Image (cartoon, rainbow, N blue to C red; front, side, top):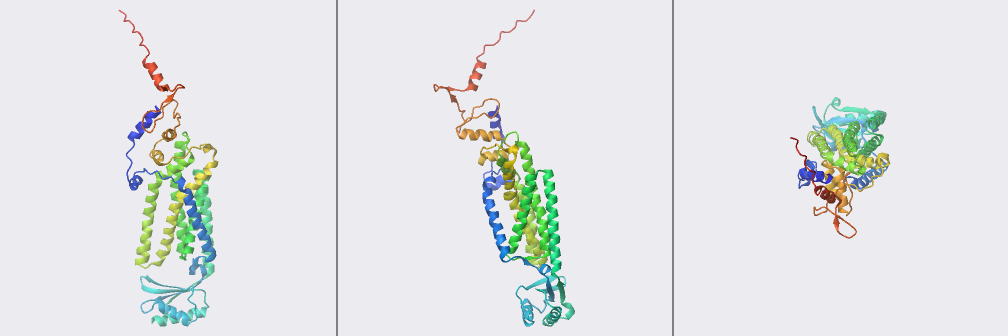
Length: 412
């Protein structure tokens, strides 16, 4: 009975696409994510070490909003970045660490000059020098003074919001799913933040208030991708609970089933962000959009990666201590066996094929079933004398050879 059901399932299964892209679109992938978790752990470890080294050696390139300082917006009709460097040099202000950028607004293009804290009289003198060099009235040169305490307050509030967010999310996931999934999701979120901060430190991208806002935004995105994976894992836990596969199979099946959805979500989210970077910042010259979009782009990429190689991999490790999944020490499914499970097949078909491949014979149901060999014929046992013999065939022969019962005479 079990063998017949297995054959029908194999026949009714849609044909497997020949190309990898076709299998991805049709949900026919059989990627062994669990087998690749060491590679993922190595990549994450290398990135975290690089982040730590970069933060200790060169730190973050904090904007004026965090370090404090003074900035001037000088009309760029007759004024260039080189002119700004000359004015700062003549006033004895070092250009090391200064930021000079050409920007545009509705009123026209302007040169933004940012330097560290300066005495009030130096700031006023430089404003006059910039106005004279740009050949504009003094009131057309805008001055902004930023205190470093304001940036520290922003950082403190952001960290407080992050801590509250993590606590609420952990409680919700623990109630909705379980504490192991909550822990794995939080670790993945922290991983995303650290990697994003590390990329900003390594490449010395400027950290501004829009960057902090983007960092908090990507936490929600990373969490969404992880919840999608965990929700499917929870469904497959219930589906395979009675069939007793190893938990690695549950992880692999779930990841393959949501892979196309995760990639589609990531692609549809990243494309608008790339548009902000290329068009909004590159073509239109809106640097504020670049500061926000760059952090979003980095966070989305790391979030998509962490939901697969961090959150799911860590959940598989934590589940080893779960009593309900202990003692399932059979090898995880790979290749066609994994593909059968991804496409809705049961664990029994995988175990039967595995046993047949290893030359073993184990029943998959309550009734004894002969395992099929590679050539498709039923494998037979043998008695001590070497004669082929099958218990199922013998029982069938006895039933067919039983003499028929005599027919009853009809009453007249």
